[in-house]
Amino acid sequence: MHDWLSILPPLVAIVLAIWTRQVFTSLFLGIWLGWVILTGGILTGLTSALQACIDVFKDSGNTRVIIFSSLIGALITLTQRSGGVQGFVDWIHRKHLVRTSKGATVLAWITGMSIFIESSITCLVTGAVARPLFERFKLSREKLAYICDSTSAPVCVLIPLNAWGAYVLGLLEREGVENPVHIFFQTIPLNFYALLAVALVGFISFTFLDFGPMRRAEKRASETGRTIAENGVPLVSVEVTSVEAKPGIRPRAVNMLVPILGMVGMMPLGLFITGNGDMTAGSGSTSVLWSVLLAILLAGGLAVGQKILTVREVVDLTLKGMGGLIPLGILMNFAFAIGDTTKILGTGPYVASVVQDLINPSLVAPIIFVTSAFIAFSTGTSWGTFAIMIPIAVPTAVATGSSLPLTVAALLSGGVFGDHSSPISDTTLVSSMAAASDHIDHVRTQLPYALVSATGALLLFTLAGFLLQ
Image (cartoon, rainbow, N blue to C red; front, side, top):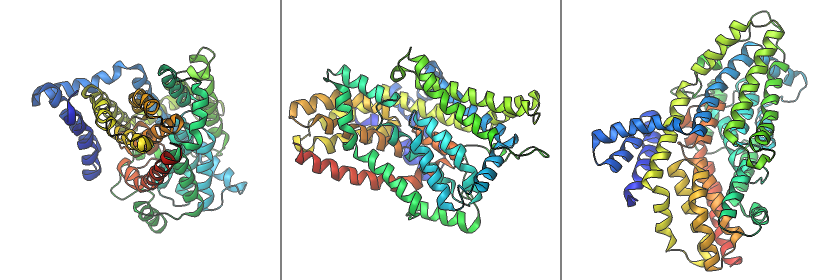
């Protein structure tokens, strides 16, 4: 444990990233600072920081996440070159399914709400379906990234029958909670941040009543046609997002829809296989990787079968797409490395220990919410926050006589809010990638919405703490 110094590395990285817009440099400086604290020397800290980035690949889950993130670039290039994306947009217009900007945002929201198996898959499918429509209707990529992000973790954490629910149930069971499934179901109507975040993104999608930086982004997109800021750098390279359909072919929506549906369908099957018949015990990262690989095989197979592309062209486009997402892979690596660094520093346990002695029975829920939010924001992981806070929150609720479902709900809400707002969170990164948005622009435009939902959640947890005490 390194006391208050353990808080500095993630905070320095996050503040620098938002202030300077140099997210790669900022994250590495945060990693470096963490290892300077751990080793006591600048040079030894530098070598240890580099080693920490390499050690990320020792975790198979981390490696799978980085690989599937880069493979998404291949899926984008293949579905574009085979005419799938253009065919999908044409089909939408022929069927008059989406005729307005509002129709595009509502479709994105509905898509995100419908796919709650895994947060990354939610982001990826929502981005793939809605991105071409957002471009056509001159809607900002920041808006799409916000919709992707706000219909992923906030929705998944409300569902017990997915990897999120299984993870939380396992942690509760480990703490000796009787009937954890019943407790989880009781947390759903009390998970105020998740509920408010989902409601707010739906409201914004239907009404276009944007505010703050998002309002400026939308005005830029509608007036100038620039769906990304002039100085913005999308996490997906332009060479990937601007691939045109092969000349002379007839665009067909099936070349996009079949791979996307295959990816969605493979996710529960992957969870079932990796969980040995129990979907809730399956590996999320493995299932996502299998899903993306299947989607690429389907996209390539359709293109070759229709004689749109040769096998050589499919391979070249796959490599081109993966190459276009190298920046995301590096960013993911740094995000995982700084998370590992804060774990060694003991950032989460330190923050939790500071507030543990300050808890008033009626204020257990709001304090747990704020603490979990800070830990998740600093470390970029909601799951890591759950692992840190559940062993603290459950005994605290029991000892103080506080409502256990409310306390757990506050913990889950805080973890999702912190993860939702943090630029080093993997779901935030995947959302930026899925929307081909500048990452810091996504964080800046989403943060005011997240803060509105968090403020409402804090007030509700405070009120509920007194009512349920």
